Structure formats: structure tokens, C-alpha cells
Image (cartoon, rainbow, N blue to C red; front, side, top):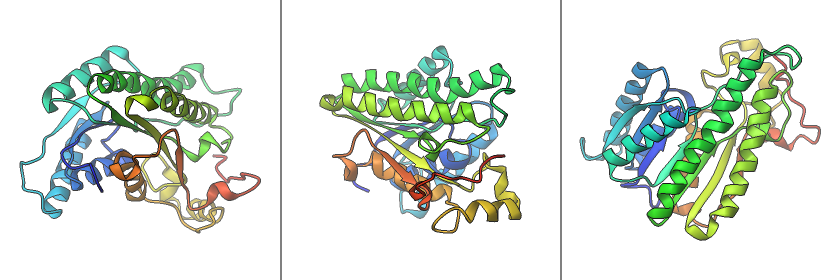
Length: 268
């Protein structure tokens, strides 16, 4: 894709799942990638190894791309500040932020412990905002940049027993649109991609054939998506091919959001 080669990219929550796939895709495109993780240091290092293999397969000379792992809890302002300082110092700047870090916890809304609810809001929404504001401050001083947020179909479709997750993704939609409008004249583009049912570790149903079949029966295309399909859209939104797109959410859901009733089997 145009304009990704040589760009400096920070991806939060990139030690597994969609974040890992995004890191690999950017390495294939010739970008310098910083892999953020919270607890999975070994997994983050495995992401780097996958990036090396992918860039080599793409014909990029070994050692020509910079990469790094960086530990941080995105919900903590001090951690975020240190993370950005490390990445910018190591890479010499930052061009693209991928806000991917997130979590989900199931529980009846009247019973879920408030500390778990607060944790979801802190990571999924507060964390994305803390990273976005640091990135924007840097972009304003360096001629612009791009932010891509990992949202969910649940910014639009309510998900029973996941009130914190649904609220946080709805909030992320509002943040994306507001920041995009606020900084459009500053050459800063901000968009989101919204995965539907995806075969990632965060979705344990992927290993339950009966439950997986039930979920896929509600998807017009008849199957769940892959992390690589999500990564392809994230790369597109960050690229120059999307230069005239801002404030948008791209749904990657096999047609799930086309149901008029927004019905979903995800009740547990």
C-alpha cells in the first residue's frame, strides 16, 4: 500500500490476536514497528520474530527495518508517556498509532463487579484516549499523522452481558469522530475499523465447534473473520490510499451489521 514504507508505527496490545497480525502486516509493508504489550513479553518477542519472517518473505533486507517491544499499561498516563518517549527516541519520530489494546469480561450487568467494569472502560476507552492525545501532540509538531482505532461491531450492536465492552466501543466511536473533526485541518486522520466475529484468542468460542457454528449461522457470509483480514483494513486506513478518509468506522463483519434487528447470538 502507498505510503507505509519507512513509516514509524506504534501498535498497542500487539502481542497476540489482531494486534499481532497488524504488526506483521506493517512489517510486510516496510514499516518500522513498535510492539506494545502489558504482560506478555514472550508473546511480544514472538510477534517480532513473525515480523522478521514476514518482511524477509516480502523481499525486505534483514536488519533494514527498526523494531522494538515496549511494555506499558495503556490505562496509566505515566506508562503511556514513557512508552511514547521510548518509541519516539528509538525511531526518531512517530507517524502512525494503532490503538488496538482492549479486553472484554462477561457478566450480567446488575452483577458484574465494578472493578472489572472499570478495568474495561480504563483499557478500552481511557487507554485509547491517552495514547491518542500523546500521538496528536507529537503529530501537531511534525506535520501530521494517522490514528487507527480497533473498535467492534458492538459500537453499533448491543451485546448482552458485555455492558462495559459495548459502552467502551460506543465511546471509542464518539472519540474517533470527535478527534477526526477537531484535527482534520492539521493533517491528522483518525479512523476506526470494527471487527465482527473474529478467530482470535479473545473469543474462546473459536475452539467450540457447536458454538462457533451457531455464531457463524448469524453471519450473512457464513463464517468468522481472521486477524489477517482485520490487519489488511487497518493497514489500508493508515496508508496514503485512504488519504481522504477520516472520522469513519469500517465494519469488517461479513455482513453482520446488515441485520435490521441487529440480532446476535453472543449472549454468553
